[in-house]
Image: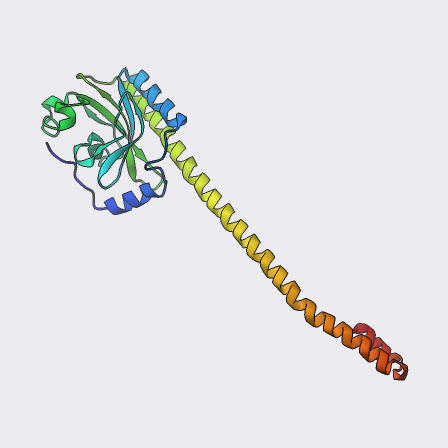
Length: 226
C-alpha cells in the first residue's frame, strides 16, 4: 500500500477546511440528497462526501456506508485531493499497487471501484471529494462523470453558502455588540452631562435671584443664553 503524498501547502489547505466549521457537524439533508443522487447516477451502492484533515477522512454524508470516518493513511480521497483538477478513478483496487493491500480493500467496506471528484474552493484548495464506491470492478461513462462533476459543484455551493452564512452571523453579532456598547456609552455620557447641566441651571437661577434686579438688558441676554 502506498500512502498519498502530502503537498507542501497542506497546512494552508487544512486551515482553509477548518474555516468552514463543517468537520464533525451533524448530518444535513441537503448533503445526503446529493450523495443519494450520485449513487443513483453512477449505479454504485456507496457515495460519500469526504473531507480530509490531518489525520482522517471524515464523511459529511455517507450513503450506503455506516462509518463516519476512516484513517487518512487508508483514504482513497487523500490521493484524489492531490490532483484538484481531475477525477481520481480506480477501476479495480485489487490490481493497483497503491491499494491492493489496503484494509479498506481487503476488508470492510471492500472498496474495489472508486471514483472521486475533488471539492475545490475559491482559493484552489481541495477540501475533500464527492466520491462513489462499488464492491466490484467498474468504470463510469462520460455521462456519469459529467453528472458527478456537476454534483460536486453543488456540494461546494453548499459549503460556500454555509461559510458565508457564518460570516454574516458573526458580522451581525459584532454589529449588535457595537450597538450595545454605543447605547451604554450614550447612557453614561447622558448621565455625566446631566450633572453639570443641572448645576449650571441651578447657578443660573441663584444668580437671577441674587442679582437679577441689577442686570441691564445685555446682562439678561447673556443670562438667557446661559
